[in-house]
Length: 277
Image (cartoon, rainbow, N blue to C red; front, side):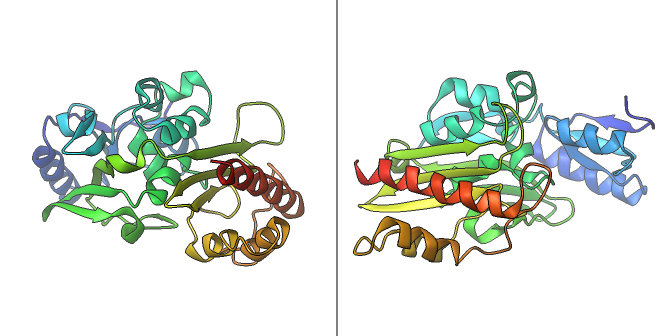
């Protein structure tokens, strides 16, 4: 139960959502956009956030699309992870979504909510980083389309009053060879020690990671090291790990040395699979 009252709004269009946000902000309501709500509820229960109003985006048609349009896979921000994996238009994304939390939670967690969340992991973004997907962002200056690799640096860099509407992924990426591994300390549910998503395109392997650092990421420098096929795989992996963008996480899920050990093995498994493709 959330220990405070707030106003609830459910706009039926992008324009209404933006207008209501501006209006509520002027009233001092500190509004938040709401998709699945799982993370908002968690933070509100601990009094980490205290919105006076929430704007539910689930009635906006553009936020619920999941289809191929003009040779692009279009996914709305309010599509649940369960629905995403069930339809399976993008197998790597489906595998990534299926590994987030448990089935009951995935029935509520939305694609956009996972990407825009505050927790470290945000694994649904990994396939988008690998495919240089585009995102549609709405705000008071209208909507804009931008590459996710331009706007996602440690987190999706939205301005106040903006929200994620859709992602667009070129159809040519959907059937590429891929590898996906999520390694946990115990069991099949929970936060990752390491998640690796990898694609092979034009005989080169591209990788993205979650759980390793305090944010999900793709590193061009790491990919360059991993694709140096003239040297042994173990040496390539050591070179890649030396180019991590931040220190390795050290938390309740696992110590930094153990995480690095798991990371090395998981990268090796991914590279070996894709080099056979």
